[in-house]
Picture 1 (cartoon, rainbow, N blue to C red):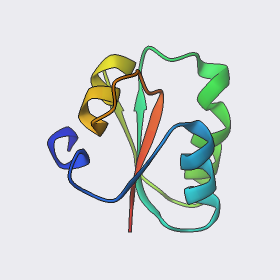
Picture 2 (cartoon, rainbow, N blue to C red):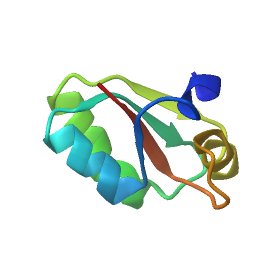
Picture 3 (cartoon, one colour):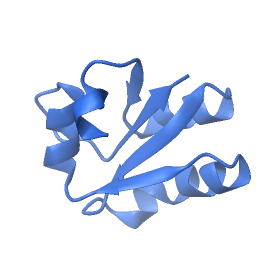
Length: 80
């Protein structure tokens, strides 16, 4: 999954990923296990309400690198 993230359409970050889920264009959400839970609680609830699968990765650093950005990322999502 992480290998595919660099080359597919995606949204990176809590705000962009939340907007994608709300607009119905997210197919899968990826969350870093080491991020603060208060930051991702809202998007987790949105995913549950909209039946969007959530995948967890070990670290924000790993997720940022997989997205092809130079900073850590708490959340990313793959777009339909």
